[in-house]
Amino acid sequence: DLLLLLMGLFISAYAVYSLWVKARPTRLAVGWSVPMGIVGGMFGALFGSGGFLYAIYLNSRLPKDPARATQSALISCSTVVRLSLFALAGVYAELPLLLLAVCLSPAMALGLWVGRRLTMRLSREAFVRLVTWLVLASGIALIGRYLST
Image (cartoon, rainbow, N blue to C red):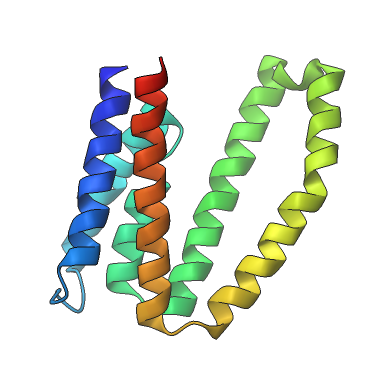
């Protein structure tokens, strides 16, 4: 539980810093790929979500479209691995869970469609700002989750 709170505080602090500070380095050095990948993997293993660290790194290194495409590929690979492991473990053997997934599929498709249309119309700066606001919302949600337990 403490790790959940610390992760929420870290994510929120970084997002507030990113929104507050206007002057940032234009590009992160390529050497940051290793520590961001390791820490992102650790966060993914501990909390099921390390994607925010990948988003921070990718948005600091790449233009909008390659960053978006790479983030989509990372999420897709992570999802395939998790789905495979959960299927092998028998998690999806319950019919109500499968029915819920089918019922939520239209909302997922709508979210993908809206997200693609939205990001295609945004400048790089607006896109990065949107991602930062989403990171902040994630951090606040984690803090709220910790406080609700």
